[in-house]
Length: 173
Image 1 (spheres, rainbow, N blue to C red):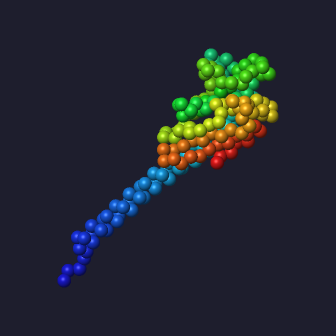
Image 2 (cartoon, helix red, strand yellow):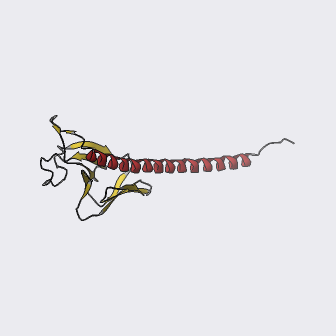
Image 3 (cartoon, rainbow, N blue to C red):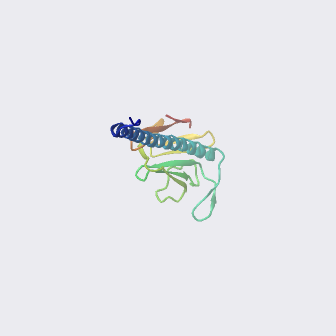
């Protein structure tokens, strides 16, 4: 009598291994997407803190013409339609009368940061946040907001967020 596996036993083993491999691939892709989501929300929080520090240290800004400007402060504009955010400087000569809003022409843009694909800006209460030194004073647009939330989302429905309050404290959730 020959010892070994029958063809049925081999097919069952191959089927179980295929099923387990498929589940492993599915969970590893979900885990990878969650990892990208965590990294991206940490990157947004880090960039918000960097912009706040640029305002506090009154970092000089070189405009599109090459002119060095000492800006009133720096801000972040959230471009939901293009899934990116833009760091900008307020190059207004009079900081007291400035609206601290990003110019539509992009003349004071410092850096544009796109979200990692396939993530999207799912929700934001604000269009922009601006830091005015020396405290820093935090301005939101719209101005009625006291604490802002920016949420990014992955295609699988997982979401992460960043909160910023009027005192400039940035946190992820």
